[in-house]
Length: 199
Ligand code: ZN
Image 1: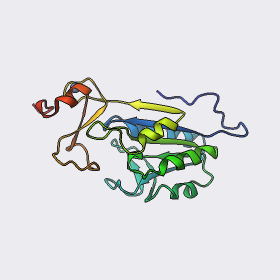
Image 2: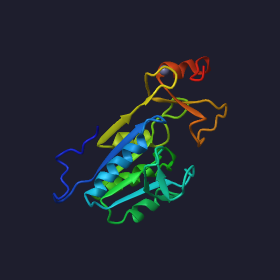
Image 3: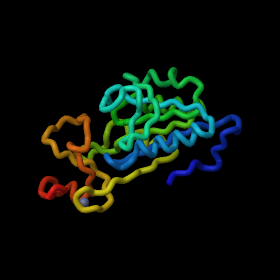
Image 4: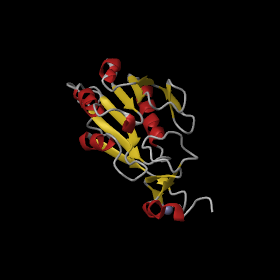
């Protein structure tokens, strides 16, 4: 489990910011981990703000919603450039669904961290083809801390890092989950439709 390093002291001056990335496949618990970290900061009375791209409208618009109904209120933004101003003087900034933000999100995260904020970003690292997804790989490169979380392969029970799409659509952004995707290990991902979790 990720534990904030001791040398990042809240009250040291000048305070340094940093970037944490939580990445992984679908059903890996990225959002739960984001919420866990943000809740702990909130309990410590740190000012937190959460943003998500407007594109993700699967659930309630104002909330970041995790799959287990554990949620924190978030602000939907249509362009990442809005975030710096909206973040104001908060100490911790959370971002969910990083892969759906525009490419400026990399500079925005840098700017936030440079101004002394703790930035926690959750996002898919690979798309349904197993290719690096959106800006997540760039964010992983500039982050101080990267946590890759894993799902369980729905076919064989091994550790899963791939999101396998069951639907024939080849649109990269396809929202909605349980019925459209499976978490799969590398082997079952490559075996494709020759194996099934529904056999
Ligand atoms: Zn498998």
